Image (cartoon, rainbow, N blue to C red; front, side, top):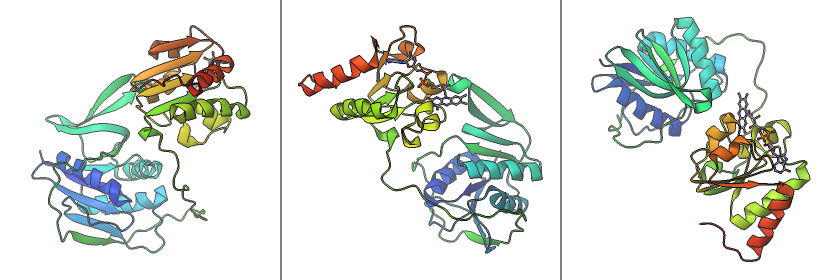
Length: 318
Ligand SMILES: Cc1cc2nc3c(=O)[nH]c(=O)nc-3n(C[C@H](O)[C@H](O)[C@H](O)COP(=O)(O)OP(=O)(O)OC[C@H]3O[C@@H](n4cnc5c(N)ncnc54)[C@H](O)[C@@H]3O)c2cc1C
């Protein structure tokens, strides 16, 4: 069966990955349209129609505005599937629009596919320790992906002249407006790209003691990671350092977990690391089940000693 797929996206980089996914999904006879929230392109893959919002007050950072545009585009294009990336605002928009057009709206979708029985996808359950396979036989269905694929393989020829459809949207009259947007400062930490990570948890007693961890990380040429409480509760490190289900998913060659208990939500973010070293004073800490090297003891004794030995010329593990 061929599908009509509508992609919702606000930046060219993301749109490209989503359009590729949409083509794979639509099949040879299907067609792909794009609800373009901020003007971008050209898109390397073929798009039959581009819906471009022309309402001056439209704010592409507001889920209720995107939802209004999505309802209009859905009524016009009549897609069988709507696909977005994982951004919060996109998820909000799909949920709102899904409620209006009476379509199920699903988040965290991996590997969407068409089967003889309907549209099927996978989703993580239990902090990624189980996978749920789900299927719906009705259309349309709204899917927001857990991650935007960075493919480029098998791309279609770009269509030099997709049909551009200006979209006049009736915006909701909610009594709030965006005052300003403050982009993240450039040059922040890219934890996913780090080859070595020294990560700290609540075993650390105070913010000043981060210096111990940073000194070890520097010796190892590693980035500093942390558990959620260190970023979200104490605020000792920014979200850029946060590893786990709701943080970054990393896969370095070396992950050193210091004063980290090993909660399932943390493990899901680092379990693909090649070599894991855990330092914890509790011999029964769950992190040890995940560790290749287990060091039972007080981090305040072990970390400075490790740093000192590395400084003295002991080779870092390769
Ligand atoms: C919906 C949801 C999402 C979540 N997402 C995430 C996520 O993305 N990432 C994440 O990390 N967590 C996440 N959490 C929180 C998670 O459940 C744990 O609470 C958290 O990971 C625990 O952090 P921790 O290991 O630093 O602290 P703790 O569990 O308190 O562990 C501290 C560890 O330090 C050890 N320790 C104490 N003192 C020393 C010492 N001097 N020397 C050596 N060891 C010492 C202790 O033995 C203990 O094992 C989430 C929770 C929920 C409900």
